[in-house]
Length: 440
Image 1 (cartoon, helix red, strand yellow):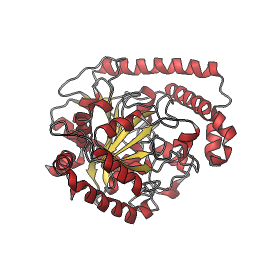
Image 2 (tube, helix red, strand yellow):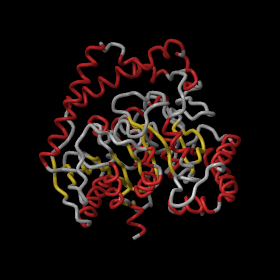
Image 3 (tube, one colour):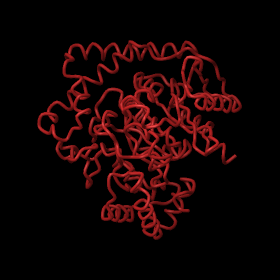
Image 4 (tube, one colour):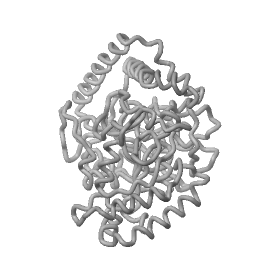
């Protein structure tokens, strides 16, 4: 099928046969309307909007090899502004309009590359796992679907879109990606523009992508370079075979399935010629405390006026979470922010002292947690105890499916870049990727 083929082949066919896109998207839309009534990965499907998107890309002149992402279906998290669509951030109101936000530059770059924005995708209210999300897991309604970029993860898993644009503040992309068995990228802050979105300025949060595989993300990196910026504040070392650090499994308290995927990923990397070593490198409690103090304060700054003028749009549990920063003094938050910068320097100094380029960890401690195991916020916090490291220390980080369960679902691992450029992290993750192993 057209949307199931390799991403490079999809783009090539779309460029060579643009006259077929209308029929392809008509079929895709019918499939979404049929299946998403249960999955609820999209906020809504707007036929007029999709027709306008197809009309827009019909006016773009492309030819190989500069084909961009022509014809590729993309979903956008409903905290990220797309001009012409409401941005409700999991509420009943168009929060993007209330705040006067302009379209996300990341959305603009995708559209300029010829991607088709299929629609807005479901999220926990204001990206807070304290609030409910409608999206269900494809495993069944009894399974937890994941953190706030949940609609994007399961839409990619269902085949509704090939890419999804989301945000990640403590694992919000990588957590649902791991549960859904797809690839989830949280790049460093500012690599993808954080403008034009609700909560877009939080420390530790960054805009990222979901795709079927690491290989698809490599394609996006190559075909749409304008989407990515390169931070200049750290020394980068680009080795052909980066050294991989793997923490000891014993202390992790993880499901045996997660441990199995981690061992398999390490084995694949070693077989590919990478040096794989044990490491004690990990986050410190002080760094985590400072990180969440800053995040709570910045959340409060963002929401305090909105909570007064539009208190009725907040879920009560989300309202309480956003109030957590009200008692934090600006001087206290400023001191924590400065300490956090020091934590980040010391962490990278330790990685350099050990000669580590990439950290390999589980993505989540369990691959199939049930919804009734606890409230959503507790499930997200437990599921994010590996992902949050990248947010605290601002690392490029990618969750990728590495092993297939007997029932067919994927078990994921996470690669976190310490000294390598994003391009090298993506190609290294492709070695681990289950889809590449399946193809071999």
